Image 1 (tube, rainbow, N blue to C red):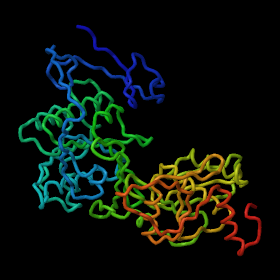
Image 2 (image 1 turned 180 degrees about the vertical axis):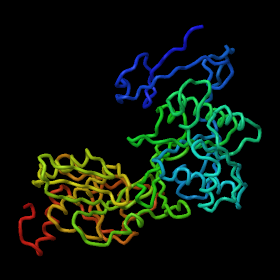
Image 3 (image 1 turned 90 degrees about the vertical axis):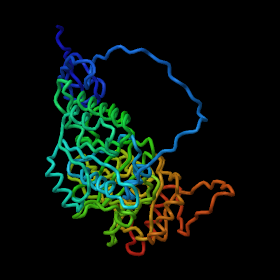
Image 4 (image 1 turned 135 degrees about the vertical axis):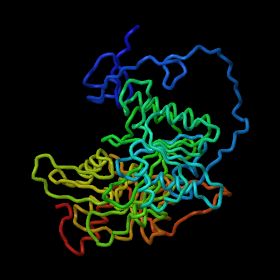
Length: 480
């Protein structure tokens, strides 16, 4: 009998190597290769490596203009959750949800399960909650804290994929199955520890195959690495229909559910939740929440009108400058791209003449939201200019626009939507680049805003405008 092949598998990307190495040559991760021993299994079992030969058959092709089946959805009643999933849960879909430990993944899914099984205005669904990390009594304690202990959710504590598949592979399978978490499951046909690449990949493949066969929706909870990505191979993200990230700082009271991938809806949508004593409450107006504590007029604070998914969100960007005792000043960023901050600082020094080389720069997006779009460049630059001249910006002004390497302010998309959201929250003025007017068809409705728009071409124009507003208070050079 031949000995089983010994492989070293990268726990980040899933690449396999015959010998151990300190660095994975596929993804560049250090110290990520783990030794695994795949063993021979009986044909027909879970995780089988050898299958009996089967006769091939021809596939049938259809044309693109054939009538497509209408996608059926199960709304959960939680507006923010339905927004991220694209309008509700699709039967037969597989959803991977990840987040930091203690961020609220299990809490959110338990609330969703309770709502689906206790719906009054529609047919209740049959939901199974399988926990591999907690005992049944621990899940019951959380349900009691959330006030959903009366919901008819089927609970179980299991880690064997074979046992889970045998329990779900029935004609009366549940409509929704929640697995918490995929890293705790194992296939007895694989000689490796739970949480390794082969176990995670094999367990997910078996569960997704079963979900597609019986048509039930599958939720897989995934752990997050220290880099902020879902642990396990990337192939798992390709296998599922949607990937959701649950973000937020545990020191803050709100959480962000972001869709990274979604085959049945938008892939850049977010849902905002607030952590309260009895669970997670949806936040229907995130802008009001992010700006709730913005009262004092301080320098270095600018309000950015951004777009998250299909909705506008207003957040406050805070910048603090302090003399640096070190030869290399510190650049600390929370909620934004560190490389983009370095670019904005270089533009301000080179094109606007500011001296920032001897100062530490601290940038924070208030509330914990992470901004990814380049439209925040102008708000960051305005906050830095305000901190440099020690003069607060107008409390009724919002900023949005992209900054180029020459200091020019470039136009951004969805300017009208940003302006209307700012006007709804009581802002009077917006500092933004000049927008190119597009011809509207007769069927389009006019959605303009009465917000006053101050357009600047270059960052120097914004600096001169701030210096002119400060001049009556202190008639000195603002760049000193």
